[in-house]
Image 1: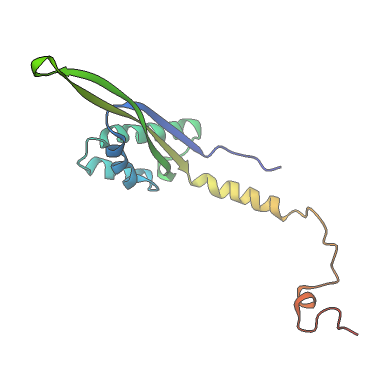
Image 2 (image 1 turned 135 degrees about the vertical axis):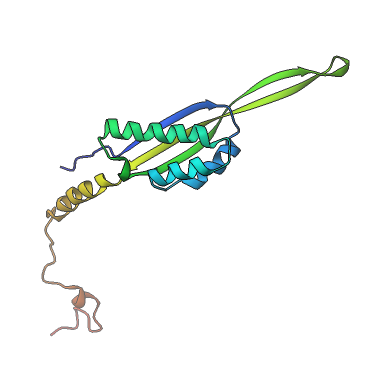
Amino acid sequence: MLKKRKREVYALGQHIPMSAHKARRVIDQIRGRSYEETLMILELMPYRACYPIFKLVYSAAANASYNLGSNEGNLVISKAEVNEGTTVRKLKPRARGRSYPIKRPTCHITIEVKDISLDEYIERDYLTWLKKPKWKNKYTDMTYRDMYSSEGIWDKK
């Protein structure tokens, strides 16, 4: 029986006060990179979106070390996505009794990290499971060469 081990953990940040477009600009740079490389990139990028994403990556790594017992050197950002959240709308008073709408967009950021050291253990278990014969070949006397040769199996005498 193939055991399914959990290999991925995630951290979710909701209602972060910035537009999803600005957060996606940073998220696209870190997707698929290792944990240490991601932290270096986020510390050196000049965008305001880097700090909340940095906190989420750090939290996802803490979740992985607590839940999976994995080392931070084996972590890779497997999935990073940004979704639009609610938009806070306020009215600013303007001249002559009019009002001007102010929109404060928010976003939801999900960072999922994967432990690559667990892949080789699961892959090894899967390969041993595959090697067990599940069925027997009914057509053992007929080979691939017999079926698709130029003479064919019907031309034999």
